[in-house]
Every structure is written in structure tokens, then in C-alpha cells.
Image 1 (tube, protein in one colour):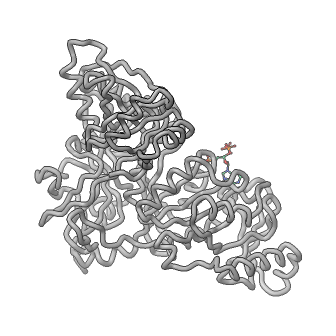
Image 2 (tube, rainbow, N blue to C red):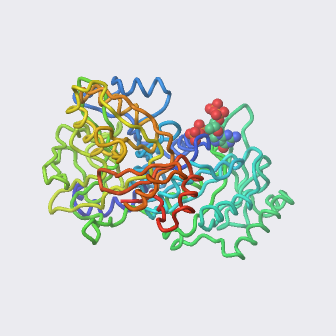
Image 3 (cartoon, rainbow, N blue to C red):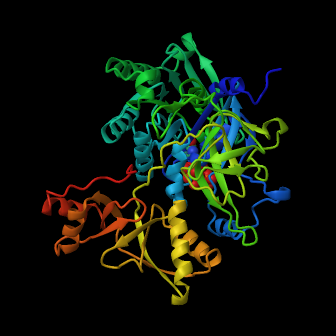
Length: 533
Ligand code: G4P
């Protein structure tokens, strides 16, 4: 038998993997779709449960208490399942109130995203933000228009909106027969003579039965089917046809319709993940060039979850395997320091099956406990040094001045703030007006402040007071732009310097104020921050 830890094994296993995330606005149906995908495929492991030393589950921590109290999930769980002999890794993108930099960072670890759109609501804010990150990172996007089982907008109108607002061409692969709320089936554009009809079983069964109708049976669907075929033809005539190259280049997005709740269109979407989404490929290196999947082990830390259990101050690092084979117990090197990191005491986040417990291949995600030293963006490797480009920092939308509760603890306070900055929990900004004693903590999501308050008090022994500032928008500018903003009496805003990279940020209450700055000071253009490095 072939050695499962060899380069050849990595080369064979990588093309079997599809690593993806679902991006959506809260309530579009992400949880429902995730469940439907996993049920439809064969779920082989749930990586949500992390085993610590002696099989101690990390679920008894204060962190989890916070999670339970809020009824939200803080952990970026990974669900692994099989479909048509492929291994699918579905990475969760936290939403709702726990939307944070972690939500964005997950997108650094996937090869493809499913953009979930509510048929009645169309494109929404959170989808837009996540889509922007996908675009910047070159992550190809498959679109799933959900909730077609209830009244919604017209299919063509939704495609128009995607094209107009996201500047990406939608290329329908399936098309609904019947308007939203009156759907009888789907036409697969690759098999246009047939109609896939869905019938909900009587007696409250959720999942609808799928039947392939052809000939007279399909024709019997009458006008709805004729309209669907006409619309598909019209779209094809305008060039809205799936094309692998433009999809992988982020110029087009294949579109699928369905209803996750009734399992309508879910199989076709799963097939699309297998057939259209790219497998793990060579990964770009900071120094130029690429790391092929069959090179020695390398992995990217894309998220570090603090375990708030006071007696065990460890952290869990989620690592995406980029090349080679991860074996539990192997010693890897952390590129940032050149120091070895023993995974001997760290347990990989895998499920029940013994065979998958010990090894992970490119595209898989491993959770390492006792990962105190690791931070998001870290590269781990064996053999000759390699390093992936740094994680981008994302546009923060929340800002708060931090001060120590007890002035006698300023040393601990400074140490704690520096550590949280280093880990990427928040971005630390210094304002000329407020000085270094009052750093401003900038975050993508407000929940980061709970994390900051908790960790500052319990881990660093310096409880903090946070004063929230009335800004919600940050743009990049230069020193002169920052000075102009601070001096201006007409524009409401303030400039700050980011400690990590010295970037000058202009903060405004909203877009309107940023707009008036641009009108007032046309010589100091503002730049969007989403992808700033
Ligand atoms: P999220 O994770 O994106 O926030 O969404 P979630 O899956 O929780 O779904 C949000 C609501 O939308 C849920 O209803 C869910 O049942 C419903 N939903 C999801 N997919 C479909 C679909 O294909 N068709 C229809 N008609 N509804 C769908 P809820 O009333 O908020 O929750 P529940 O009481 O049904 O659980």
C-alpha cells in the first residue's frame, strides 16, 4: 500500500478536496443550507468539538458561557463530508453579532465561496462585505438563490442586481420553472430537455423528492416551462453561460436556484462544489513563487480562538493545510520566529473516524490546542523555510478608546493591548489628539470588545474602561490628509495612525461625512481599506 504520509499521497488527496465557505447575510438560510448539504452528503466528521488534553473538551470555559448566553456561535467550525468520492470541507463564517475579523479571515482559507442570496431580499449588506473580500482574494464565487419555495423577486431581476451591484456576470446553471413561491421544478442548462420536478411528500416531510421528467411529462408543465426555456435562451444569447476560466478569474458566477429548507436544488449545488469549485492548488509565497501541494507540509493559521477557561489559558489555532501531509505529533516550524512548534500535545480537530484522526491533506483544517504562540496569518512548515503573504487587515467599523481601570496597572495594560494587537484581535490606533496613553481599539465587529474586556481583566490583570467613539467608517489617507481632517471644522472626523503598520486612517461617522471630506479636500483622496495590507 502507498505511504499515506508521502508527497505522492498529498498529490493524490489534494485533488479530492474542496474547501469552501458560505457567505450570506443573517437569515438568508446559511444554517439551513449547511445542514441540508451535510445531510445530503455523508457527514464524516464535525470539527466543532475540540478535544484538549486527556480528552477534556474545551466547552466548559467562560468563553463558552458567553457563547451560550448570547445564543451564538463564536467558533469557526469546520464540517467535513464526502460527496461523490470527494472530501468537502465547509468552513463556517460567523455572522450576526459575532461578525468580526475572523469572519473575513476564514475566506483566506477557502478555495471557493457559495454566495447565498434570499430570493425575496436580494443582495444585503453582509453579503456585500464578504463578497468584496472574496473578490480581493481572488476566491471564485458560486451563487445560490435560496427560498424559491416562497414569494420573492423575479429571477432575471435578481441576476441584474448581482451584475449591477457586484460587477460580476451571473451565469445561470439551473433555472427555476415557475416564479418564486410557485416553483414546480428546475431546468439544468446542461440538460435542457429535462425538468427536475420537486414534490414535497405529504405529512410534513421537509425534503422534497426529485424526479427527472422528459418528453411529454416535461411538456405538460406548460407555460412555466416554456417561459423558463425562453429565459435561459435569452441569457445564453447574451453570453451568460458558465465558463470555467472566467469563473476562476472571478469575472463570472455560476448561479443555482433552490430552497435549502426543502432540499430543492441542494444536490445540484453539491455537484457544483465537486465539479466547478477548484481543488487546493499551489499557494502563493511571500517571497514570490508558489508552494505546490505535494511539497513538504505547510499550513496557514487563519484563526486563533482564545480558550477562556481560566485554568487553561491555551488557545486553539485553526490551520489550513496548504501542502504536504499533516501528521499529528509532528514538529513544525513557525515562520515568524523560526521556532519549532510541537503538535505532540496538540490534538487535531477531527471526528470519530480513526483513519482520519491522524492525518490531514491539503485543503483540510486542523485545530491545534496549546497554540498560545500562534497568530492569524502565521505560516507553519517542515523542511526549508516558506512563508505565505501576511493576512490582510480589514476595514474596522467600531472604535473605542481604552484606558486602564486602575492606573497602577498601566504596565499590564500596555502589555495586554500590544498582545491583542499582535494577535489581530483588534487593531490598535493612536490618535494625535488623545495620545499613546489612550489607544483606540478598532474592530470589525462589536463583539471583539467583549473579548478584549474579558482577556484584559482575566489574562493580563488589567481591567479596561472602553469609551465608544461615534465613528463607523475608516478610510486610508496620508499624513497631510489626516492633518487636514483634524484641523477641519467642517468635516466631522478624526485621523489616527495604526500601530502595526503606521497607516494613517481617517475616521468618519458615516459615508456622508467621508463624502464631504472628499469634496472639501480633493487633494487628499481617501482609499477603501478592506484589502489594505
Ligand atoms: P442563517 O443561518 O443564514 O441566519 O439562516 P437560517 O438557516 O437560520 O434561516 C433563516 C430562516 O429562513 C429560518 O426560518 C429558516 O427556516 C428559513 N429558511 C431557510 N431556507 C429556507 C428556504 O429554502 N425556504 C424557506 N421558506 N425558508 C427558509 P425561521 O422562521 O427564522 O426559523 P425556523 O423557525 O424555521 O427555524
